Amino acid sequence: MKSALSDYLVICDMDNTLLTAKEGLPACNRTVIQLFIEMGGLFTVATGRPPESIRAALEGIRLSLPAISCNGALLYDFSTESVLHRSTLNREQATAAIADILPKFPRMGVEVMAGNGEMYVIHANTYTHAHQVDEHLGSIACPIECVPDGWVKVVFASDPESIRKLGQYAKTKYYGRDNYFLATNNIYLEIMPGGVSKATGMHDLCALMNKSQKKTIVIGDYYNDLELMREAGYAVAVANAPAEVKATADTVTTCTCSEGAVGEYLYQLIRRVTDV
Image (cartoon, rainbow, N blue to C red):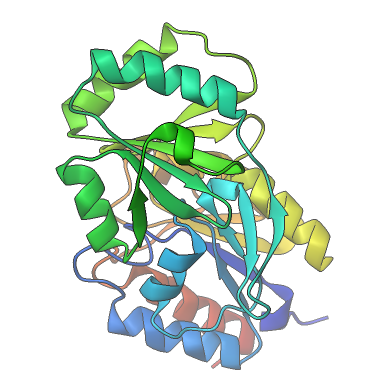
């Protein structure tokens, strides 16, 4: 029996895969995503971004299914404007980590995302400011004790060398077993709820939507996409991905992110499945 586009669920990373922080969404990605969805394909995103930022970056594209947000801590349905699944940090352990790290890395920016991914800036720097501007995020600057409960992640933001040193330091410390550190970019190191990732977000999404994981296609670019790519039915790396990520993929695009890598792959998929 011939496959249809509706048989496939494409889960796409956002930053440096689907779009760039400065240039946004390439026009060809927008055009082909809309065509793919109109022809029955299922398309959504898996990203560290909170829902507010996803909405702004997609510029009107209507996802077929709920988004995997905050690196799997939130499943957010834009059609109903509701959280379908939420995983939270152990606040006490996360607070202990922040209290230990900030005196040793006094220039480190610190953000807490809570609730539906609302951002609270605990310690500002140029990187937290750029994060807000680039991802169209509203934020509240406040002391840590004023952040509401329901933390979904903590973001440390600084220059690549400081983040590298912080990553090394964090490996030597124990703040409890309920959270873990995740490098999501060379300027970000995050604290995530234990056992939560983009891959668990995909499991939750497939279970909730009654979709087969074997029919998932993941498009990614970075080390935090590796687990998701390994557990997908098929994995695609964009041309700008590091060698280890490309080696994990079933295929690598010719185009880079800014050249429209996602549009390139989706158009190939449309032609292959529909014989256009």
